[in-house]
Length: 285
Image (cartoon, rainbow, N blue to C red; front, side, top):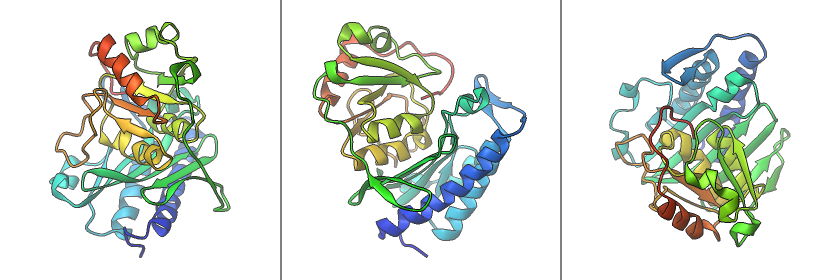
């Protein structure tokens, strides 16, 4: 059994779990499937449920006693998680809307928070065959099927004029998105899945991902945040505060901003000046 302190072994073991869940997701993706709704504009599929069950069982077996806060689990199963020294946050299929649309922009995500801080992130993007791991003190890597690792790092963009801004495909980001080019961003890209967007920031393929308003829940952001931070980037909520993963409140009510680091404060200043988007339905990030 790998302990939480063995970061290298930990990311290897957790990635193996995420890859198994990804195989489940792709099996469902390859055939016609039904779509249910937990709430308006909040779809769920067999892939969400089966991957959730697999990941939770595997984490509980490998790391007994560590709570698993997973999107498709009964909240009673992780009651009191906020007082635990370490907690897993799991989104078994991040980007279910995009899974349903079959555009490939979805991910399997497993994150670990310790003392309220995200320290380990594993993100697998099964439709495109890419997998990423990151851990505090270890760094961030893209991992090939044979287990070989390529170190990844956020970009060196120092100004908005050099920066590509990524926003949600499903939920508008208000004036920041509407005025992106006027505000000086080099490029605006809409993309599904917080996990996919996080990998693009961590690899330096894009420079900032901003969702100023409601930004899903802690299971949507723990793994991407850990990955981006391990790759040298910076993450806060929309007002510049550190996100606390030991809170009893699961929704990210104040937004999510992940960047390469150098342009983070400038983006936060824009958000403060423009104001957050109006509240709307959905929980997409």
